Length: 243
Image (tube, rainbow, N blue to C red):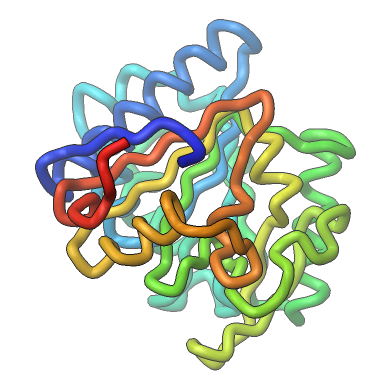
């Protein structure tokens, strides 16, 4: 298994752990470098974590004016669409905390997918240099082994140096935009949040099965020299073999 595994009693505890990790890594980054750069993910567990960040006491533990928010992936929809990761994050916590709007960098899903990918790669290079590194990247695990919008069936590190690329999801019949593994693996901390019995089989396959990133793109996540965390609940961990 790659990374450190932490098992919690249920989804609310996973969400709390994600929120606490956000606060802890933010405070560390702010203390060491004066800024905190984070890449958000979509999904139910992150939404619950973001809602906790909007509440006391966590909301006042961070200097929000020095926080810079990015996204690991996005659906090619307008920012007010119900499927938008940006919209979810905005409603869950960004509108409720004193973060300057200019510090929030959304993927422009309303553009042509290839143009949107190039646009976001320019944002990353402008803000973070040719080899962008986030202080924290949050990820989820799809039931097919995908993460961000790196889907099974093709090498997940295709066009890695592009930093961001447009991909078409056959299962969802829609275009999406995603950062590449090069960006994810340059992060100082990467954390997967996984909950629910429906994720048990795929979590076991990703962590303890044969390595095959084409079939299981989540396996390509291996930040170096950063740390990798798996924050999961008991239901999701139910099929893991003890090691």
